[in-house]
Length: 567
Image 1: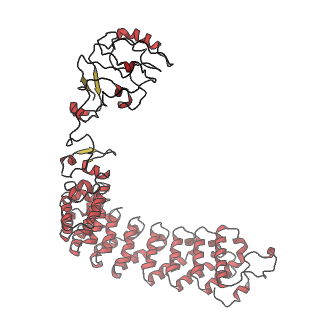
Image 2: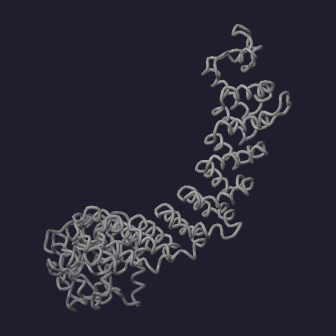
């Protein structure tokens, strides 16, 4: 809101130089309709007209509308070329209106805002030409010869005065100015202390300095990181200072994007009494926190730090809502952490929730979040607890291996299950190995079998793809041309013993020329050549002196198998 500062009625302002020259305002304001007496210009000014066009008319005034005709005529005489300065009258003429100086941006401070204005240049300094652009605000005011100092000039600010915005000097954080709220450069309302910290104006800030602002700092990205770093090596007294402020708003901070990390740090580096008080604050809110994006992280960290009795208090609130947590994008992480950190004997309520209904295990195994929990059960639970889970899984192996999530559960059974579990899975896959090997998800299960199963199980899979002797189109040939199954064939070549690798070679040999036409078949040929070169075996029937036209690049003959070296 603009502030008007009235001048004395008899005030007059003389221009720093005659308003003439290149595009000067002199021709426009040669006369004024209502003259008043003004002081004459110094002789040195009259003899030095400004050579350039300056940015402001002699002074902003409201002219009588009756004189618009004279103004228009004067504008017609304005020229951009050099001209001799006209004869300056003895007095500069101004309307008898009261001059007004407009102050913008003072806000609600009123006239008190004048105290913080920069002082005007020395009004009695030698005159400078108007071409100088270093004048006050570059509008010509800096070259005024005389001015009423009561209108603009203010006494210099006192050291204890605060300018609008950020303090220039660092004040102790207990200064009342740090408690005021300001809008930062990012548009967020925050205290002056936090804003100064974010802008590196308080480089030596300590825990004691932020007393009274801990929760605000904890909810700020940079402030939260500052507190976390301090907590890692802070003495007990400073930890307690922070904790007493944190505990007052702990439920809000646990759900905050940055505040939750401060609470986690107390579970990691806090004192036993502080951990206990935080655990007490969690009670009654376990489910709300477990299903919340940031609260679930606090619960997980708490489960790692608290003792068994405190863990049981957390579990008790979740017993009746296990499936809800398992299927939730946040809650499933809490259940996984419970399975990892709590003794298996305390986890029976989770297993019971899974096997209560017949199809629950299958539904969870094909669920994007539930499949993770099933895998944790297979890793950490006891054999007695896993047995009913595995039984339900074996009933649906063929469906699970082709599911985008279920295939990971089957792979986990292969990796962490018993030998009988792997035997059952391999036997199910061998019944339709070609279809499974050509499937995007099931092919990964076969590769896991070839990696983790016994040699007996590997040989079962290899024999099932080689087919019967003299088969014109064995499963192995179809697999070598498929985008997914060709990787299964490559894995078979990697893990096969010498006997079964030769068996695969016999199956492939009649189809070499045909395989070279397919991109995926070329990969298999390259893989075979690598093994032959590694074993020092020849891959050519004819001697090297034979012309290249008789060498197909991979003419594998019986001479390969006459070698006694294993593949």
